[in-house]
Structures are given as structure tokens and as C-alpha cells.
Length: 155
Length: 155
DNA sequence: TATTGTTATACTCTATAACTATA
DNA sequence: TATAGTTATAGAGTATAACAATA
Image 1 (tube, each protein chain N blue to C red):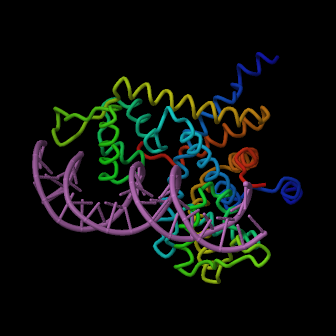
Image 2 (image 1 turned 90 degrees about the horizontal axis):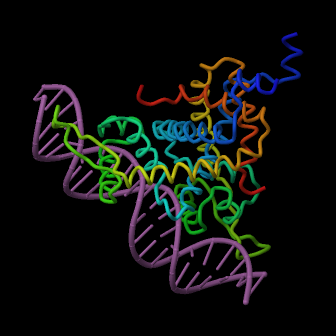
Image 3 (image 1 turned 90 degrees about the vertical axis):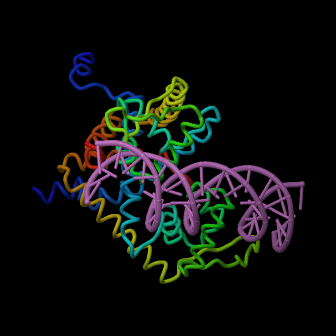
């Protein structure tokens, strides 16, 4: 019966999965980037948007935490933050408890930016995904839920 | 009954899907990049590897076709190719049928590189995906198959 | 005249190394 | 002495604009 089953519905080995993910994920990523770039009103790169989203969700994020989450080195993160502070999207201040640390917060302009950018990317993505049937969308949801913990940074 | 069903198993709207994809895909991408970077023997960026893979599969790829597939502008693509030619991974020659066009081919070193890089990234990805159950892997396969055509470049 | 590709130029992203300040 | 972050510097990646060659 096991044999029969695997003959009908090819069993998904980890290698099969890996191949598929490596084929499809970069293409999706590229579409996200392109969509973000098209939206002239937004002007945020994917890492910048991820950083703002993280700061938005976390209370009093430090630079190290952010760098860990985004997957950048500390100097690279620091430099990105330079730009976002200059553009008035976030504030960078000293942590009074430990003055080595930095506390990052969104400004209201930053919150507005992140919301616009998220809405735009989500709308563009939703438009594509709307072509799928209900069952396929369910599979996407299940797949993303399954994959998320495998690629988690920062608990 | 529709109500009951959606109460038990929340219906996946396109917006839900979009949110999930936008949350998870960048994290996966980052892991791919990091994995590639760690492999000191490889030294290829994700776009470079995609380019080499495309050249590998297509016979006599032109620059425009490649740029379209990778999602880069022609000048950017040309510059990337400069580097890959310099490193001896591909050859760039004139198309005798239409001398405006360029024909790109892998060298044997290039084929070796692409195979090593693919094996390495696939192994790293497979290792992660191996933590999933059979059903989850099936969902991943189904999701990727469903998403692929939505993000296809170049028919 | 349209198509294919290259050159010139500039800006963003990211890294490593060396440094400063606080704990 | 260890940790958090910044500055200095350099290299890769990408874009737009202007150009050259071929069809």
C-alpha cells in the first residue's frame, strides 16, 4: 500500500522540496523588489522595509537585535539606520539603562511609510495570489507556516 | 455550513496569503544567500547562480533573454557577464545569424561551479526541510507549484 | 529606423578592520 | 576585559543615460 501510494502521488523528499523552493523563492523575491521599486511614493528597499517593520513591532529595538533579525552585520545595519534617521523615518536614541545600547523607534512619518509600503506590496502580492484557487491558497498558507520556523532569526 | 467551515478552518484570502508570503519569503531568501556565502569554495551571488543555471539549461542564451529571466537591466546584466567571463565561467561570442546578438555558454569550469553551488544550496535547504513531516513537505511542493507560474519571467 | 548590446557614471548595499564608549 | 555601536574603506550590484554596431 505504501508502494502504491508513492506510485500515485510521488512522495516529496526533502531534496525535491529544496529544489522547488530554490527555484521559486528567488523569483517571488524579485517580484517583491520590483513591486516596491515601482511604487515611486514609497522608495524603500526590501531590507529597509523589513527593518522598519521590525522596529514597528518590537518596543525599543536595539541595533544588535535588529541586525540579527535582518541578517546584516552591525556596521551595515548602523549605516542603513543612518539613512533612515536622515530621512526622518526613525529616531535613534541612547538607552538610559545601558548607554552603550541604542533604542530605535519609528517616527509618525516612518509609521506612515511602513504602512504604505506594506499595503502596496501586500496588494500587489494579493493580486497575483488571487489567481489561485481556494485549495491552492490553503496549501500556500500551510507551506508558509511550515517553513517559517525553519528560517526564523531571533526568537 | 460555510460559516461553520470558515470558523473551523479559516479561509485563506488572497490578502492572508500575501501577508504570509511577504513574511516568510524574504527570510528564506536570506538563508539561501547566507548559505551560498558560507561556502567559500563557491563564491557566487544568488543572481550569478541563477544566471549560470539559466545559461546551463538554455542552448545559446542571448543577453536579452538572460536579463529578462533574471530581472535585470541590460547594462547590469552585461556587467555581470563581464565578471563571469573574466572568471572563466562562461564564454561570450557573437551569434553568426545576427551579429548584434551575443551567445552565452558555460565553460567546463562554469558547469562545475554551477553544479557545486547547486548541490551546496540544495543540501543546505534539504537539511532544513527535512525537519518537516511528509504532509508538510507535500504542502510545500503544492504551494511552490502553484506559485511558480504567478512569478514566471520569460515564457 | 529598430534592435542588441556596451560604456560611462553614480548611488546603494554590504563587508572587514580599526576604533570609541560604556559596562 | 567584554559588549554595543560607529567610522573608514573598499568592493559588488544595480540603475539611467549616452553611445556603437547590426538588422
